[in-house]
Image 1 (cartoon, rainbow over the protein chains, first blue to last red):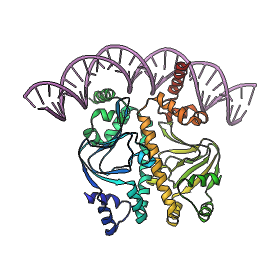
Image 2 (cartoon, each protein chain N blue to C red; image 1 turned 90 degrees about the vertical axis):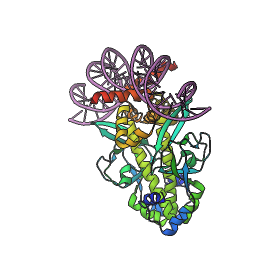
Image 3 (spheres, rainbow over the protein chains, first blue to last red; image 1 turned 180 degrees about the vertical axis):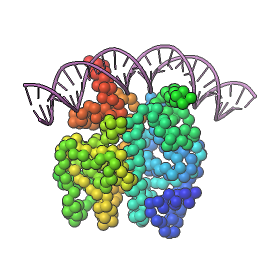
Length: 192
Length: 192
DNA sequence: ACAACTCGTTCACTAAAGTTAAGAAATGCG
DNA sequence: CGCATTTCTTAACTTTAGTGAACGAGTTGT
């Protein structure tokens, strides 16, 4: 499991054995059961998550309804906005499946960044990449219809269609569950 | 004008006079006329922009139609995804108004980051903040209707309503210009 | 001054999403 | 296993966005 992490890191910086051991000694690998709520609305947190296995989702509860806005799967990193802004969280984070997560603390990161400037460089590059990627996702979302978004999702993250409940996918696509059902039926009709 | 920049930077790191002079000597301040295209689709670029005055917009041309996806105004920073991914740009960047911009080059940033680790820290923190802010914007977009998005925009960026043409605002809101017209009429009707 | 364009609005019509409700299928739990 | 809950689908109806066309106001260029 650590190999997956160091394989990921090696795309950004080369770590020495000493540095790898420093990371391992932080004891940041965690197994988390499906359904576990990692972060609640209103809660303050300093934790960031890196998914080694499984899937976590973020969702808001608005007018008593869950609105799922993102899914994080293998090799995805999530630092909730509340960690950055140091304010109570606006949303929930929970495990959709049994997960193996790397959970880090922002205080800890400050120490690591001072000790290993390499690490800070990696975080900067990673943030910049995520920002660019998310920008493109947002732009695609804005410039396409719900149907196109769904087809785009089938194309780009087919695994989500399988592992995520429809009603969560629906809000991820910015529509109601009934509309997703209908839209899927419409697509099937067109094909056959 | 430089004061605005250093005022912004001081929120993240404290610069010495020497460091400030180093930045000024880079000669990165530019006046740009309204309508200037800073980046074209298909073009490779290493430039990032920081808006000191004016407004720039990013847009795609899809099926011959302009789709505006973002506006950057005073104290906003834009690093186009193509700069990060080192691939040809998917979109255009142009000046909506006469602008004073800080234009930096990613090669230059590498040098600066090595010389002044402080600067890299600032870039990391800034990226993390922008990522979190954009995440919230995206979530709000997903969880609201076009009408709510418009009202939200009036609330949060009232200046845009004034300085940006309607048809550009429309695609920014993910709808057609006609729908924005109608939606505005609907809102006025409800009020009075 | 005039033609050509752009921009915003309006209208009639079509298509698609929201809403409400009902029921079938799958899942979880005692 | 069987009951309850959740999840997914379908349907009828309402609301809203997309489409194509037309119009007037404002701009640009000659």
